[in-house]
Amino acid sequence: MTVNSTAIAVLLISFIIMILLRFPIAYAVALSSILCLLVEGNPLSTLCQFMVKGISSFSLMAVPFFITMGVLMGTGGISQKLIDLANACVGWMTGGMAMVNIVASYFFGGISGSASADTASLGSILIPMMAEQGYDKDFSTAVTITSSCEGLLVPPSHNMVIYAMSAGGVSVGALFLAGYIPGALLAISLMVGSYIISKKRNYPKGDKFSGKVLLKQLSISIWALAAIIIVVVGVVGGAFTATESAAIAVIYSLIVSVFIYKGLDWKGVWKALDECVNTLSIVLILIATSAVFGNCLTRLHVPDIAANAITGVSSNPYVIALLIDLILLVLGCIMDMAPIILIATPILLPIATSIGIDPIQFGIIIVLNCGIGLLTPPVGAVLFIGSAVAKLPMEKVVKATLPFYLCMILVLILITFIPGISMLLPNLMK
Image (cartoon, rainbow, N blue to C red):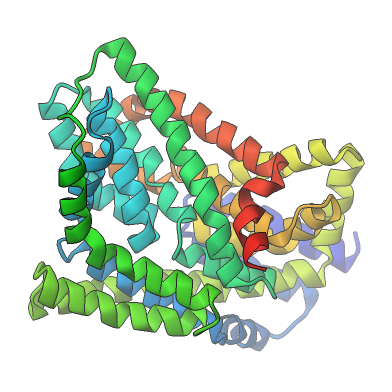
């Protein structure tokens, strides 16, 4: 074997072994990169250089700001107000509380940008509420965890910022716009699935629709929803960059949470900031170590090898697109979202663009694939959170989630093969 072949084998095999041994993902990425550098004969100082370079990005500064905004809003009394707004919109339908859960996740996702935060915040309120009204607890949990993935698509999503950085040259504003329709399509798909199950199990309806109640709840929730408008309109309109908009959104969310909704005192603010630091430290370590791993992949021409291997299976662009989805879904079963985006984007994006998939569309594809991965064992973080919140065995939650997996896969296929779903709003704004 040549040095390159040996280095590739060491890099990938050691990484897979450590993942299977349940090493923390950042350690697995870093250690496999170190072994690869040693096989190549490179000094370990190269590791530090690439780690620093990986996080030395102005656009990356948007990530801590968006995380901070989401935590402040999530702990500042926003959840119940968004649930009340969703109830006014769709609570009158068959399976009303399931519909409320899904629509509330769409609203809350636009604030938190995190499926885990959505599940923890809304799930702790809605799962017991649904159980009290006669819904099966496993069904309530399945609806909660699957609808939380809408928040990954609805801007502002810090995962989209990470993808934009990994892809290089992709507009964050265009990605934000591209997520709205796929997020809505996912919500509609889950609502259809919930309606069918609710009709079959005779789940209750809520109160009759009232325009007056809807306007009242909208007036209360407008302060929270305005944060999304500040970010998206500001970035898309060119008034400020994604980083600047995120910083403004943090100040705005602090004012709303402390002075308007009064869900936080200053002690609560410091506690929220402490939570942000813990989350951010994990994200930045992943980005730094993934930068080294990605550099090893690029230097060893692994993207080219992967492209040749995939195109060698078939030259049909539809088959290649399905293979890309399959690869991402398998990765989602063993890895968390951020490292998949950081590692898989440099490898799979050139293949996707070669068959006519726009980088913006591919960003939505990879985010939804990773979102499904968050719900699949053995590493699905959102699945574990949902099980913990509901106090149910993971196996029971997975079984109840099976119909919703089908809904999500259907949306994924539509987004993969119909570019207009993702590209309509970005193209209109151009």
